[in-house]
Amino acid sequence: MRSMSEHLCPRCKTALTPSQVDDLKLEICFSCHGTWFDRGELAHAKDIALPDGDWLDFDIWKHSDRFTINAGPVNCPSCSKRLCRLQYGDTHVEIDVCPTCHGVWLDEAELSKIVEALDQEINAKSFGKYMKAALAEAVEIVNGPESVAREWKDFRHVMRLMIMRLFVEHPHLAEAMNTAQQSFSFLK
Ligand SMILES: [Zn+2]
Ligand SMILES: [Zn+2]
Image (cartoon, rainbow, N blue to C red; front, side):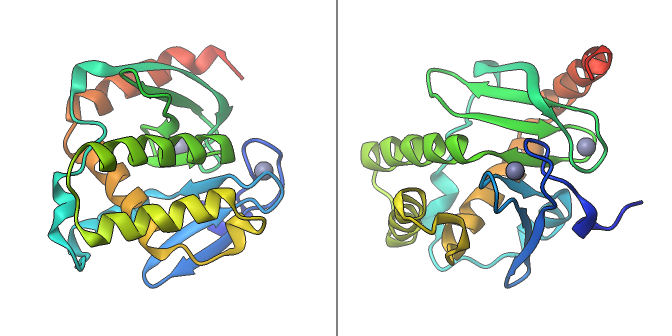
């Protein structure tokens, strides 16, 4: 198996740069500003102590039947299989998921859309300070000139938890993605 630092950006083929915040490891493309969330991070997700329990009520991916699965535009940086593109309901959020590796690729544009969806979700309900701070941080990241290079610890935790919940709480979706990925095998 290749070491993580040898992964190439699935979009622009630049070598990904490992980035660590506390126990959280990500791989970032400093050329196109995409981010790879590796499944290794998911194993620890349940152990994370967050300062505010309110995030538990947060789930922009609540209903399994609102997902659509299509072939994504890029292949998995870890196993080279075609990623599945997940779109949820009437949000504009689309994420590229590998059902084999349980990794998630987010390009810069997807990050902006997630922030937008979070913004709507958070404004529509009452969330605690933790989620609001994470969102404010995320907005700054997306709008800031040095976006990816900044510290954005809270938002990364939120993203990781969203990804973890995608697999843990939607096992049928994971299965459907697996089947879809197999049918994408003719794509290269
Ligand atoms: Zn790139
Ligand atoms: Zn993979």
